[in-house]
Every structure is written in C-alpha cells, then in structure tokens.
Length: 151
Length: 411
Image (cartoon, rainbow over all chains, first blue to last red; front, side, top):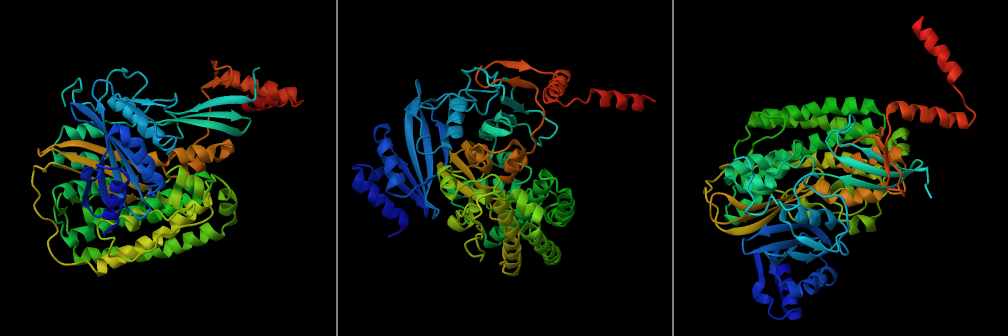
C-alpha cells in the first residue's frame, strides 16, 4: 500500500464518512474535502498524528456560491495533504491557524485583503498585500471584482 | 513614563539602500531591536488576478515575470501544475533541459547572493569577484535561451529550445571555470577570519524554530533541516539525478553562507550529469489550448527555497485560479524571529541572508516613541543638533573644532 493510501485509511478510520471525500490524484498528493465542523479535528489529527508539520500555504477560492480555503500541509517526505473547507459567500468567517503555524499570519492577511474573508483570532497588524488606501470593501480576487480600467 | 531610549525607526518603502520597495518599522532600545514590523506588498502587481483573465499561454509569460532572478523557478512550478491537470506526458529530454536551466539559474542566484552578502558586511572585494564570475553563467544562460533572465524556455508539454552539442560543450567549459572559482569561495567562506567572525552567531535560528516557523530553502538547511523539494518531492529530472542535500548545523548567517557555496558544487554535479545523460528525442508534445477541469499543486525548489503554485482549471482556455507562494513569504516569520533582541547593525546581513536582496539600517524620517504612540517628524537639522547636544551633555564639545574646519574650508 502506498503512503497516501495508508494516510487515507487512517483518516477513514478516524473520521467516518470522510473516505469518499479523499482523492489521491497522483503519488504524494492527497486532497480532502472537510466540513467546517470537523475541520479543526482533521487539521489537528493531520499535524499531530499523521506528521504533517509544514504548512506550504493557504489558497483562497471564490466559487461563486461559496468561498473555499485549501490548507496545503506537507510531510518532510514530500507528501502533501490539501484540506479544503467551504465558507458561506455572504459572511465568510474562519478561525485563524496561527496557533499551529505562526507563518500562516501573512497567508491569512492575504485572505482578508484579496477575498474579504474574516479571520477570527488574527491579531491586529499591517495589511498585506494591498495598499493602505485601498477600499476596505474591495477584494480583487473575488470573481465579481473587475479592474476599473479594462485590461 | 516616556522612555527616551526606545525608538521606532521606519526604513523604506523608498530608501536608497533598499533594492526593492519594502517597509520595516524597527522598534529599538539603544542599538537593540525590540521587534520589527514588516510591511510588504509594494511590489504587488495583481499577477494572480491577471492570470485568471488571460489564456494559459499568456499567463505563463506573466508568471515567469514574478521574479527577475528565479523566473525559471516560477514558470516551471506553474507548468508542472498545469501539465498535471492536463495529464501531459512531458518528454524526458524536456525534463532534463528544465533541470539544466534550473541549476544554471541556481548558480547565478547563489553567486549573486554571495556578492550581496559580501557587500552587506563591507567586504566589497567579494562582491566584485563573485559578480565577475557570475557573468560566466549569465553568458551561458544567454547562449542557451537568448536572455540573461526570463528565459522563456518552458511551455506546456515541454520546452521551446533544444540544446545543441556545441552548446553542451560551452556549458561544460563554463562549469569548469565556475567550479574552480567556487572552490576558492568555499575556502574564503570557511577560512577567512573576517567572514567567520562577522557572520557567526548572527541571525540565529534554532532547528526547532526553523521547523516551527516553516522556514524554507537554504535558511532551513543551515539549521540542519534537510528540506529540499528536489529530493522530497522530485520534479523534472531530479528523481534520476544523483546529488546531496547540503545542510549545516551553525544555525546562523555563517551556516547559510556555507550551505549556499556548497550547493553550488552540487549544482555543477547536476549540470554535468544532465548533459552526459540527456536522452534523445522530442523536446515537447502538443498541449491543448483548453485545459480540462481539475486542480493541482506544483512545488519547486527555487534558489531561495520552496516555491508553491496551486492551479485550478475549469475546462476553458483560461485558468480559474492561480495561487503563488514564493519562498521569501515563507521565511518572513523566521526573519522577524532572527532580528529580535539582536543589534541594528546586524539587520542588513540577517535580512540579506534569507536572500530577498535587502540591506540597510539607515536614517529616520520620523521618530515615534514606542510607549506614547506619538510620532514626531524630525528633520536633518533637528537630528544634527540633537546629536550635538547629546555629546555636549557627555562633556564632549566639537563646536570650536567645527568652526575651525569651516574657516579652513572657506579659505
């Protein structure tokens, strides 16, 4: 059994019903769709029990009816676990993960600026990457945002 | 109570000694750094959004321009993700050529870094030497691709330029020269007393902190963390190429220097192997204009560390989403940690040591007192008289001497 299959089985044993939401598109890549309720447990299990100690980054996605976030976690042997959660489009809120990964701070600020996602527990600080005078209600990576001048 | 020894000094975003616009707000007590706030984003060009609004081919050329130094890193990372979604079988020869260009890029980047590091510690002879030698690899890259940076070698399904036997010979000749020079730099880095003393114990990051703060690249490897995507998550031809991951246990700027100069030797090894074992055959296969729906994550060991590109395709000729995480962003928390409780004079080299090409500790525009949150603008004249008064308070008065000098200057 491959390393990825093994991880899939461990996840399936721990979280009933998650198995059909785990995809292994190629060696060293695992994609998991997690519900927002079970996310914290899956996330902690991945870090503490499965050895995913490195956070590559967090990707935000605007999927029109919802926002999705993908947490890209890595093992030192190159296996990547991509945990995806979905947030409501009207009021996207998520808990910060800087308690687990301090380096996540800048990735979460990106979500705030570019997608307008509220991150609970993210301390006050300098914004990133938009300028200080950028309107607070404009989030360029939202699909309905268009540049004022035609590209 | 107002503690007049505590200062907040803004450095940047526009500053003569900064190579790129970034802003540091350094809280100081005397010479000691209490904390640093780093404001990034002045270079944000909206490339991720731009990629969503362009075709894959157009996006590839924009993505290549994310960075001038590791342009090949970004474009390779991106095409890998797209090729994975489209299930393209890239010809082996193309993978070898990508590896070759990638290693030549690493050589030019590391030599550039060594020069910058020398410059930051006032060892400008090293800067002149390394940048002179770097021209050898720049010429090779120009020979192979027509450009010193932004090589435009990658395309979906392979590469756009083949390597001729004459070019291969030129590369080998160049690598021989570079290897000779690098041996000398290894000697300099490991034996030259000035370098050892200036860099040892500066910018310390323990192995535990490197892991906790998710440091990447030579920054992590100098803390004894053998994290190298070329080995851990092999791409291009790296699974077939023998090379060692260089680590060091010094956990400081000195260690980062040693890791980089030794990595140069590994790069030469890889280049020679790739040229010797390059398979014959086509250099590209035809890729569709429309990429089927799917998602993939590309990883690449750029000269500065792990580069990550996430691509989501929706079946059209434009990507649905492109996400880029460059290595410097991952090392940001580590830098803040390295600077805390250290001296201001170490700041240029500590920041330079993660290789974002930074320097400087210069002059204040505004002085904010840390605990009163009040900022006052100080001009040069006021700063000068503040200095004169401060020395006068210590019983040192240069006013007579100054008058004498200005009298002489006039006459």
